[in-house]
Amino acid sequence: MSWSWRKLLLLRPLIREFIWSCIGDGRSTSMWFDKWCVAGPLSNIISSRDITRAGFNHASKVRDCIQDSLWIWPNEWLVKYPLLNSIPIPVISDDNSDSLEWRCKDGMGKPFSVHNVWDLIRPRDNLVSWCDLVWFHACIPRHAFNMWLIFKQRLRTQDCLRSWEVDTDLAVVCPLCETQPDSHEHLFFDCPFSQQVWSRVQQIAVLTGAGPSLASIITHPMPIAKRKSSKSCIVKLVVAAAYFIWHEHGSSQLVF
Image (cartoon, rainbow, N blue to C red):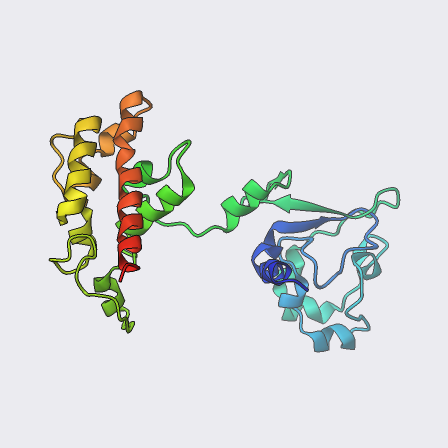
C-alpha cells in the first residue's frame, strides 16, 4: 500500500461521523458499526459482551434487529442504555437498497465534494489581519507560503534555529550584508540589501507611509490589500519582494 493511501486511511476516524447510512431494505447497513441514527454507531454505546449475550453478532444488519416493525433487543437494554428509547425504528423498504449520504454538522445531507470535506475537517482559528496580503486571487503559491512563514516567523533564520536548538555551521550574521545578526526583523527590512529592494517597492506601490519593518508592513497596506483594485495588486508586490529576498538569502548562504 502506498504512502498516500495509508495517509488517507488515517482520516477514517475523522470523517466517519459525516458518513450516514440511509436505510432502505436494511440488508447492508451494520447495526452496530455504521452511523444510521443520531446515536450511532451503537457500538459506542452497547458493549460487545451485551451484543453477543442477546443473541446478536458483530455482523448483524439493521434488518436483523427488527421484527414486525419493532426492535427485538432485550428490554433490559432500555434500562441499561436509556438512549435506545429515543432511536426511531426505520421503515424497511424491500424495493430500495441502503445508501450512503454525506451529512454536515447540522445533519443536513449535501452532495459529496472534496471542498465540503476539507471545509468540515480543516483546523480553524481566529482570522488574522494580514490574510488578504498573503492569500488572494491569482496569488503565486510559493510566494504566499513564504509570506505566511514570515508573518509566523518560521523561516530558518539563525535566531529561529538557535531557539529550536538546532546545531548549524552557517554564519550567525546575515549572509546578505555580513554585518548584522541574522533574524526576521533584520532581513525584513533592516538589512541594507533588503532596504534597497523595499525602497523600490515603496515607490512602485506608493507605500510612502510604511516603514521598513514587519509591523509596518502588516498595518499599513492592509486596508489597500482588502480592496479589489489595480492598486491592491501593486501593493502585493511586497509578497514577491519578500520571496526573492529570502531566495537570495538562501543562495548567499551556499556561497563559500
